[in-house]
Length: 341
Image 1 (cartoon, one colour):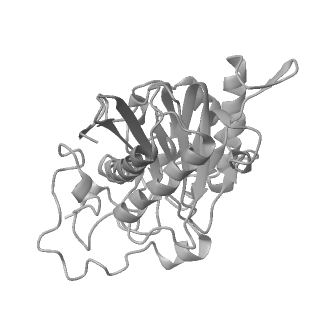
Image 2 (cartoon, helix red, strand yellow):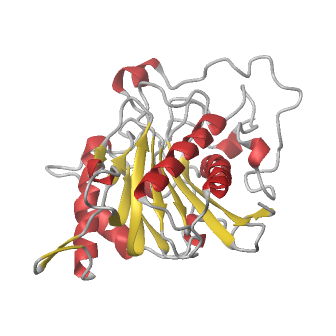
């Protein structure tokens, strides 16, 4: 591996063939993020949290028949947010997309949700929650450019110490032979733990920051004595499981389903380097692995090691960027990063 840089946008959409759309409801303090695939792509998933909420993830196991997906949904709303995949499915079906079964097409849209029901938003939505329509709108809004922070699935996200948010980052690996592989991360940051060191504003992800993309404070120095004191959401949140960080790691490398899962496994190191603690019994932490194959590069085992390491770093950066970009809203229960002392 000769060189690593960010992609043009420093977003997951730097991976050719990936588009992202967001829909948010500020009154609800919740939203949906849709990842739309230009064509069906190889996908997998790896869950490491103890309280996941998902739809159509079993089919992503390497031994199962459906290897490719049409898109992914990350949603707020806890279990109510799983409805977002139905709306996304409807939008994708209108595009004539989906798994072909005789004359029919069934869009394959796996989904994961986070808990944002106790964030100060108005959840009195009536008989049915609004997530199906939000999923539809998020797909229709998909493009290469999108905002970070308090948007989409990150709209109402919280960490232990400040608001969370939707984050993204990208890395381009230039191999020794001159070929390039792009990696992109997208994450809705809503953990039980903290992305910050001690009581300060320094990010745990600081060693991996590129070009001051989340404030440029660098590594905390001197390292605070209270750095490893556990900062977690309130005791009421522990009882309800009001957490979860959900993410996508994508690449334009040529991978099979098992290799895409290995990429997702490696990317969980990015959670552990950016959030303390992570992967707790009350987090539903998971990462979808997505491979478009558009670079035409099928990495050998040595290059797969590089790919996993860079993917973890990219995920850490995306987490910090989501928190860094969060914005204030009415009835917030926690401050944004920028307002911390």
